Image: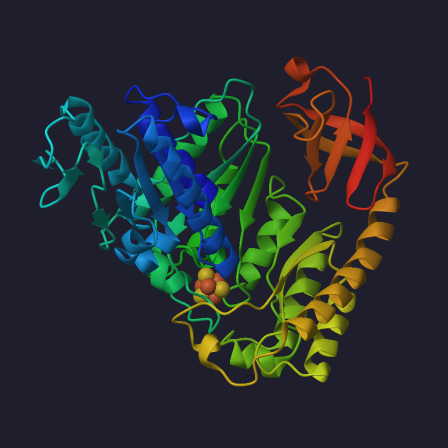
Length: 464
Ligand code: SF4
């Protein structure tokens, strides 16, 4: 979701005449979109912003800003951590970033820096003073972390790509009304707010007109999309209604969504996989723990049995379905028995892949205050055990695909080796192959799988 939000902000700059640069030392404005899910991510963002302060030595006008979850949760406290910081913009204000930056930047460019001690009030950034002291800009100190009605509808523009774009993310909602005890998202992203179906379909149509073949619908709890705003129709949830509407878009070949929650994963959504063939044969379905005791402590309002039942129903609805998951290992109070239940559950479902996170404390969350915090050593041991189990599941599953022909959507040159192309199967497995990027990007190709290195498949396009 952060990637999608960043793209939206970048596009607002591009359409108003700014140029995006991959060279941070050339930039007039440097913005970091931050994540608060793990403490490590916050520390990394703070470190990076600290280091980049040096660019102001030669280019005094450079504007520095934090956006996103850390900006939302920490607000003006960030100015104390990073003295050269100008801007802190929260998760409901991405659409305001351009005005703030442009305003600060143009005032800086206009001001003669030899006016020692001058103070400037920016045009749009009311009440904020850019402090200039002894020829040096200190900081603009603009903070905007207010809630804003309708902000979910502002994440809708895409940066035109130089090469054929095969896939795109589409943000369908913002926020989350759940209160998982380890998660800071409800505080940083606010309440669930869905975009109207017509707006989302309009965005998908525009993407398809530009050549996009696959969209991934994004939401914190995507399957609960619209539950507080839009009614059920014929027993179908707003999310299933949305899937049906997006499915209608001509020229679109594939639909994915992430991430659903076991709560609200009802039979209408299971059934959608039987009559909407554009829905890919893959779901990313966060389990978090296989122990009911830990799920309760996590405030995840379902039992392991329910999670397993949904997986079984989904496999019956789409026999070749791949399921991937998120697991938090080493949650406060997790005993060896709880951990073994998680391990067993991973084997029982037979996940195609999983993202395993060692529990890390997030400030202002109930789990951070819980007794029985586990040592890093125990968390790491359990993490390694789960990784081994996942490897034992993934390697043979992918090896079984050798010799088969898979339909792959070519996404263009591989990120790691530009000499090769990469794409994904409907089950979301990455396939690397050789071919002509210009001709094949955005095409659905039949690829004969010839090798697997565990998580990545290698093959050759079939010539028809
Ligand atoms: S469902 Fe739980 S983990 Fe997911 S965003 Fe909401 S509170 Fe966080």
